[in-house]
Structures are given as C-alpha cells and as structure tokens.
Image 1 (cartoon, rainbow, N blue to C red):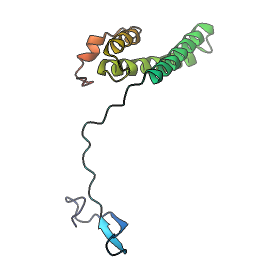
Image 2: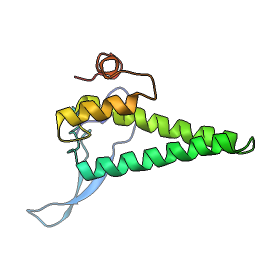
Image 3: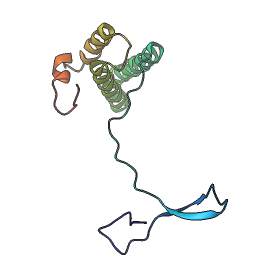
Length: 135
C-alpha cells in the first residue's frame, strides 16, 4: 500500500478495518484517497419547493421592512432580516438563471427577473458574470 501523503514520509497511514469476504477475517486495508469531485449533480427543480421558498423569503423581507419602519429600536433587526432575505433572493435568482429553480425555462426567466429586481440586477448581468460560472 502507498502512503496517502507521498510528500510526507513520516505521516501515518490511514487504516480502516474491513471484512475480507473470502476468508471472513479482519484485514487492514489502506484507504485510497477520495477521488476529486467533478461537477456536482443539479437538484431536480420542483414547483412546490420553489413556491415554498419564495413564500418564506417574501415573508422574511416583509417582516424586515416592517421592523425597519416600526421604530428606531427594531431598525437593526429589521435591516438584518431584510438583508438575509435579499441574499436569499440573489441565490434564487442565480438558480433561476441556471435553470435549476423551476422546471420551465420561461418561468425561470420570469421569476429570476422578479427576484433580481429589488437587487437592481438583471438576468443578463448574472448570466454573463464570470464569477458565477453560469453556463
């Protein structure tokens, strides 16, 4: 068996115990390094999950705006809640641009437009952003 860390000769090998199917005894087997992850599989879009997510984010945003307008004491809490909801809107917008939020492309484009509107972002600017690597 080879070392898991070939550059560090003094590192101990990571061992695990496994049953040998042929002999029925315990054998020490060196664990192989985990393969590098390629592209992660996309989650299948579900309309009911999308509606529930948008309902929660909209309620949080409305609560945050209500707390901001209520009094000076609740202003910081309202700003935090509204900011968290807006970051959730951005995540939903990126999912819409990727086409993984709803099953229909036209619905993804429409919801993405509505969700990115309060952030003053357009769907095309998110689609063309090199940092998001949206294909």
